[in-house]
Image (cartoon, rainbow, N blue to C red; front, side, top):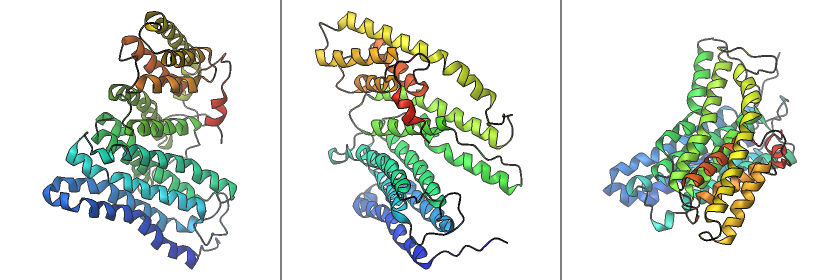
Length: 382
C-alpha cells in the first residue's frame, strides 16, 4: 500500500506568497491603467491573458504541491519550494507583467509610447535568461523536482503565448504565429479528454529536437519584441521557425493517441525521413546557397556601397556557415546582421535568400562534413 503524501505545513503556507507574486503584477497593471480604462473600455480585454496566466500558475502549484520531491523518488517531500522553484515562479510573475503591455498595445497599436518601446523585449529577455538559471540552480542544489519540472513547462508555455500575443499586437509578428503560442494548450487538452474517456494515452519519450525548436521560438520572440529588427524579415523567420514546431506537435499527438506506428525508440516514419533526408541533404544545399550568395554580395556591392565592417562580418559569417564551422552560430549572426534596422544590405533578393537559408540552417544544423560544430553539444545536452 502506498504511503500517503502529507504536504508539510510550511510548504502549504508558501502558496500565499506565490499567489502574491503571480497576482501582484496583474493588480499593478490595473492600477497603472485605471484612468485609461475608464476612457477606453476596450483596453480591459488586455487584462485577460495576464489574469489567466496568474490563475493557471496558482492552480498548478496548489494541485501538484505534493510532488515537490526529487524526480524518480516519491519521498521526502521538501518542506520549502527551494531557490529553483522560486526563480521559476518569479519568471511566471514576469510573464504576467509582460501581459500588462497588452492594454497599451490595444490602445496605441504598434506605436507604443516611447517609455514602453523597449519594455517587452527586455522583460522577455529576462524571462528567457531565468529559464536557464532555474534549471542550473536545481541541478547544483540536487533539487530537480517533479513540481519544478511542471512549473517550468507551464511558465515556458505561458511565456511564449503572452510574448506572441504582445508581438502580434505590436505588429512585429504575423497573426499566424499565435498558433505557436497556443499549440501547447489544445495538445494537453486533447490528452486530458482521452484520459477522461478512458482512451489509451501513450507516454511520450523525450525528443531533444522538440526542446531545440521550442528554444528557437523563445529566441525569435525575444528578437521580435526588441524594436531594432526589420518586421518583414521577422515575419519570414517566424514562418520558417513555426513550421517544424507545429509539425512536431502534430507528430506527438499522433504518437500519444496511438494513431501512428513507432519503433522501440518511439521513432515514426516522419522521424526516420527527417533524419535521412532533412539532416543529411538539406544542410548541404543550405550551406552552398549561403556561400554562393555571400560571394555574390561581396562581388556586387562589397567595395563601393557597404561599410567594410558590415561587409567583413557578413562575409565571415557566410564563409563559416558554408564550411560548417560553428555553422549555427554563423547562421544566427547572418540573421541578426540582415534583420537589423541598421543593416546596409536592405531587402534585396540575395539578402532575402541568405536570411531564409540561414534561419533554416539554424534549425537543421550544418550536417555531415562540417568542420566544427560545438553548438551541437550544447543543444543536445541532457
